[in-house]
Every structure is written in C-alpha cells, then in structure tokens.
Amino acid sequence: MIPMLLGVSLLAFALLQLSPGDPLAAQRNNPQVPDELIRRIERQYGFDKPFPEQYALWLGNVFHGNLGYSFKYKRPVADVLWERLSATLLLALFSSGLAWLVAVPLGVWSALRRGEWIDKTVSVIAFVGMSLPSFFLALLLLYAATMMPELPLLGRLPIGGLTSADFDSMGWLHRVWDVFLHLLIPGTVLAVGALAGLQRIARGSMLEVLRQPYVIAARSRGLSEGAILWRHAFRNAANPLLTLLGFEFSALLSGAAFTEIITSWPGLGLVALEAVRAKDLFLVMATVLMGSLLLLLGNLLSDLLLAWNDPRVKLR
Amino acid sequence: MSLLRVENLSVSFRTSAEPLQVVDGISFSVARGETLGLVGESGCGKSVTAQALLGLLPPKKSLVSGSIQLDGQELTTLEIDQWRKVRGRKISMVFQDPMTSLNPLLTIGAQIREVVALHQKLSGKALEEEATAWLAKVGIPDPLARLNAYPFEFSGGMRQRVLIALALSGRPDLLVADEPTTALDVTIQAQILELLRKLQEEFGMGMIFITHDLGVVERISDRIAVMYAGRIAETGPSSQILSSPLHPYTDGLLESVPGFRPRRSRLVSIGGTVPSPGAWPPGCRFHPRCHRVLDRCRTDIPPVTEKAGCLWSCHNPLAQTP
Image (cartoon, rainbow over the protein chains, first blue to last red):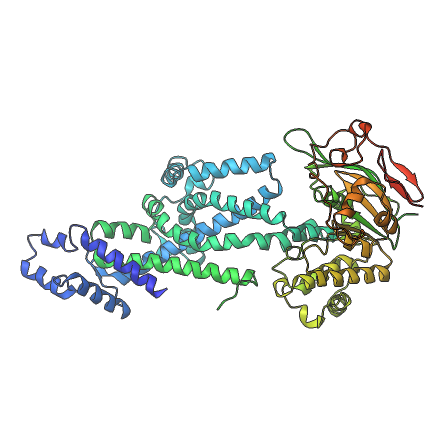
C-alpha cells in the first residue's frame, strides 16, 4: 500500500515538473509583487532546488502531516481539501448506495425472468442510462428543476451547491433534509451512470449461480423458492458485486468531476481540475494522494466485505 | 403395488428450432426397498429422467409427458408449491458432484438444520441434536464439531455423506442417486455404496441408482434398466441382465468392461458413439452400432417383449439361456 502511494506521488510530481508554467505564475505576472518577494517564496517552498530535492522535501512534509500551501486558494491545502473531501464522499456514498439499491434487485429480477419482456425492458433502459452522457443528463435534470416548476419534487429541487443560503438558520433535521435535496440531482446523475453496469453484473452473476448444482440440490430437498433465492443463490452471486464495490467507489471519485462541475457541487473533482489548471503544485499532489488513498480504502472495504460473506476468503 | 410407476415418460427441450426430444416414452417401476439400476452411456437421457422424476427440469424450457406415479400420486401435473411437499419427503436426490452440490457459503450445520427444520418441524436444542444425529448416521466422525465446518473443509467423500444426510433427512420413500460415486476415489466409492445400501435397508426406501459403471450397478441393484438414446433397451433382474443379456447393446457394454466375461486377450468396445438427441436413426436406435443388425432393424421400431420378468426391445435378441 505504501509503495504504491509513493509511486503514484512520484509520477504525479514528475509530470507536474515537466509541464510548462509554475505555481507562482500569477504572482510573477503581477507587477505589484516585487521580485525579491517571489525569490523569498521560492526559497521558502524549495522551488529553487533541483527536482529530487523538492520531492524529498514535499514527502518529508507530508509524513509530518503538512500538505503544504495552496497558492490559488491562499489557504493551507489541508483546509481546502477537508471540506471538499467530505462533500465528495457524501456524494459518492449517496450515489453508489442509490445505484446498488436499484441495480441489484433489478439484476436479480431480470435473472429470474430471463428472456421475458421484463428482462428485455430493464436491459434496454439500463443501456440507455449507461449511454446517456452524465453531463447531458445533469443538464436535463437542471433544466427540469429550473424551468418546470409544475413537476412534483424535481420542479422544486435546488440546482447547485451543497446547502441553501439560509442553511445556518435551519434546525438539525431541516439541515439534513436540505443537504438531501441538494444531493438528489448530482446523486441521481452518477447513480444512473453506474446502474447499468451493476445491473448487468448482478443479472449475470445470478444467472450463473442459479445454474449451480447446489441450487438445484437445494430445490430437490423441498426448500421454498424464497429460501433458495436469498439464502443459497443471492449470497453466492454477491461476490463479484462486492469486488466491484472497491473500484466503483474510486471511479465515482474521478468520474464525479464532470457532474460536480455542472451541478456546482463543492467536491474534490472541481478542486482537482482547478488546481491542475493553476499548477497549484501542493494542492494537485494532495488530490492525487487522496484519490489513490480512496482507491486503496475502497479495495480494503470490498476485501473485508468479501471475507465477511465468503468463509473461503481468509484475512491474513 | 409398486412405489414408483413411470409410464411412457417423454422429455423434450424447447429450442429455437423444433423441440429436441431427449427421453422417448420410457416405462419402469420401482418397489419399496428395491434398487433399480439405470445404466447407459453418457447422453442416453439418464440424468434428464432423474430430474424429471423430481420436477427439476426448467419448466419453461422442457416438456414432460406421460405419467409418473409415486405411491399413487401423479407427479407430472403438480404445481410448484405442491412439488415442495413431495421433494425431500417422498422423493429425494443425491447428485453426481459432491464438490459443487453444497452451498459453499453456509456451514454444514446450517444446511442440515435448514432441511431438518423444514421436514421435521424441530427447533432449538432438538433441532441441533437431530442435525448431529444425521451427521453421525452417515458416518461423519466427531459430528458435533463438524456442524460448524464449511464445505471446503470437507473431502469429496465426506461431502457426499453430508449430501446423503441432506437428501434423507425428510425420510423419503424413494431416493434417486444420480451417479453418486462417479466423482469419488474407488475406495471411497465402495464406502458410499455401502452407506447407501445400509440406509436404504434401514428406511425401507426404494432407490433408483443411475450409473454408467456396470461394476457399481452389480453391487447395488436388484433390477437393472439399460437405457440407450432416450429409450429403454431392456429391463430385468440384475443377475439375469449381467449374466445373459438379451439386447446386443447390453451385451456390448458387458464385453467392454473387464471382469464380466471370461478372460480374453482384449476387451471389445462398441464401435461408434451414442447418437445425440435430434440425430436418432430410424428403426432401432442401436442398429448402426449393432453386430446383429437385420434389415427390419433399420426401419421398424422393435416392440417391447416380456418374458419371465424381463422386458426387451430388439428384433434379434441374443438367445435367452434357461
């Protein structure tokens, strides 16, 4: 886990060094900032040193919990990241939860009704959902939310941000509801994108398991179809889904950037993009680290769930 | 009266083209306490017959016709919830591959308790004791501790024992054993056969033992039905069939297995392969491979002839030794 993080950070650091421009470009171009000050900042952050030394300096700081300073936001990187990270995590959790709640039952249902019209209809809808670009769906929903106030719920949804303007004056329960309403549009957009793949995998996995000898053997003993489906088939079909969970989680993080930007969700994706464009070195490095860390955490989570579901998977 | 009476059973599968017939009008019966060995090469329709007996064939993809009467009850017309009352309690099944026939995610105990609770309406301590007793009955050492083990911690032979316990815990009248020893070592095979015979005697149940192994069928069957290409070639008492078969197919099978015929320099195999369903030849289905073939074998389906407890379907049977 540690070697992988080191490798990723080294690569990102090198790529940033190779690209033109530098973090202090804005300050350099400002005639009111004296050259003397810029040189002092360069010395302070080690920008005057050769590349390997800069990397070592940054790495040392990270190990001491210091992620550096964002020149774009003019605040410590940790502060910028922290609030953004929680917003992105909230969105990722909400949308993957939504996708799973819809996709898994739909997949099981399609498997049980394989080849019937319901299976075909679900497949077509799932593929339409997968083919629809996320930004387009986001724009459609935003359009409906702003221009069609006569629609129930959707017509009155907030069209951006994490909270309403009067959030601070709300009660506790009202705040949760407010965030939930703000989550609906970006969450739905992301969930629709993930839904089709999940539904196909749930369906395929279920079909595979329903053919297994232990399912037929269970039926031969007179067990009810419900017991066969949930006790014997579904838990076995869940393994590939749990493996997917880890990737799903990190994919949502990077895949969320588009949706975050369009629905102005104050998440990590938006920050990462702006940081790269501004060559805000320390902020870029921190978002890269966060991304890899979440990928690893996602995989850890799915490994733990697998071990919990399947006794053959042993944790060392 | 027979425990199981199968009359003119046919099974075909729906395909994108026309239905594919796999079992073609077979009839046989099994009495209480009796073992019928169902013998034939792969692809003769043995396993499909077994699954039809328990209604396990996918309903949308298969067509079953004819009559299956178990203890006077017609099974072919049962609905799904009626089947549930029959399976496990009146008719049960042991499968070919013990490695894949147990749910890998549930403990042995959970799987046994599930069926015992279903069939015997037990719970709590009584359920636990009954589950342990079943493991002991099928010869699992240290049964109480093994309840908490998972299938992957068991060997193939032990898993087959567990599967036998699972199949018998509802005290069925009839057990269908579909090649239960094929996937096991020879020494384990003998143990499993012995166990099945012991339990059959104890419960007085009828058994259909499906196999392609004549050595196995000799040890366990009272009567034998030989299947070929979806039909029954001949039926009769084991000793009769194995010592002096009437059908050239049975004769060919016996010629090709060591130990049944006086020693010769080499074993003789039957030329060719079993025709697959959909490619069955007209007349007698065995005629392209038969060394006693007559002209009418190629055109006329041989009628079933009965004599002294034997039934055969052949135009030119081998002489029946008195």
